[in-house]
Length: 116
Length: 113
Image 1 (tube, each protein chain N blue to C red):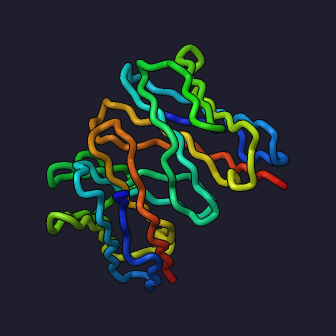
Image 2: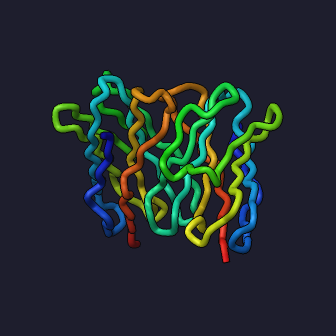
């Protein structure tokens, strides 16, 4: 079965702190895709990043960085120098290839609160 | 920048009534999806649609649900006889290919009373 676990339900930091959101996944597929989405208080789901299972290079985009490690089935997300606007629920998601439907399996989400 | 749109933004209906939620996916995308999110919970997959047919559906997507692409732009989700537990935010999404990022619409909040 495919599963995504985000063990951190809520995280609270003070502005300018660095914060890492954890994501652990399970799949039997050899080819799969991992994603992070942001859901701000307004409720929409905003795509942040996609990785495929063959690309373990870490990625940095501004204050955001992602660490993908197949050996530990983890795809963690770090926000450097957090800002109040980063306050949101962050979802990690997995898409396998076995059923060919492309569905995303979401984790429970981590609610990040950045205080001024 | 192209985006997925959904109407209405909020729908209130009585138990047992039929509702149709509408979505306009991004124009050059080929795969379409419906998800739902009960308040405060995670996002759950309902159904994926490609080449005018359902390619995958979850156990939530039972006989009371149906999807349709009635023309070249709209993608609809119909709930035939709503129940209280259908109250949720329903998101439509589209992607250009399998495994690619899915872009989500702003959602329709369905309230069943």
